[in-house]
Amino acid sequence: MIRTNWTVCHERYDTADATALRLDYYRDVASRYYGRPVADEEIDEGILTEGLGRLAPPTGRFVVGRAGGVPAACGGVALLDAERAELTRVFVRHAHRGTGGAALLMDALESAAAGLGARRVVLNTRLDLVEARALYTRCGYREIPAYCEGPYMEVWYGKELDAHGTGEVR
Image 1 (cartoon, helix red, strand yellow):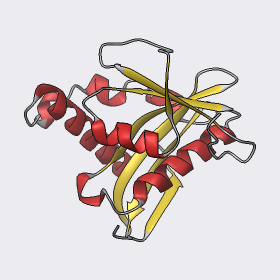
Image 2 (cartoon, one colour):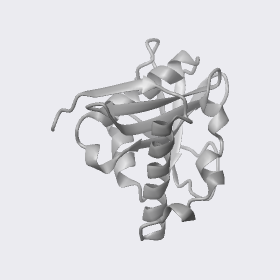
Image 3 (cartoon, helix red, strand yellow):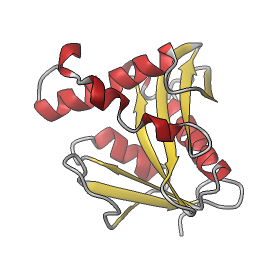
């Protein structure tokens, strides 16, 4: 594995870097869904901003990962209830995959969830997002019954957090 100088920090979801990362995330997942590259004009502004308010304190956090100072990854966490937080928009740009940043991103998101008071982290994804599913499994997430429903939700994962905000599979 190539090691890059990664930093992962809390950042507002609407900064220029965070917005560009979220746009790349939607380009990637939409292109996979449609089986072809998706143009920026095909990405509805509504989907780009949907639910973002819940990713701000006090109910959520957004994080940006930088590799060698370059924006390379992002993810959000939002409280669902007193016990659970949901991960969303977890993304590492293709050029930075395999450099160690994804695990750091997941650690930062889990710590943010614990900081919000969550004891369990959940998420949903699509079956075709195989790299994301492999990441979640490597980080200790296990398939769980559906906790929500929607048109792009095909598999659900969960993980218990220990008292220090790090994951512990139970």
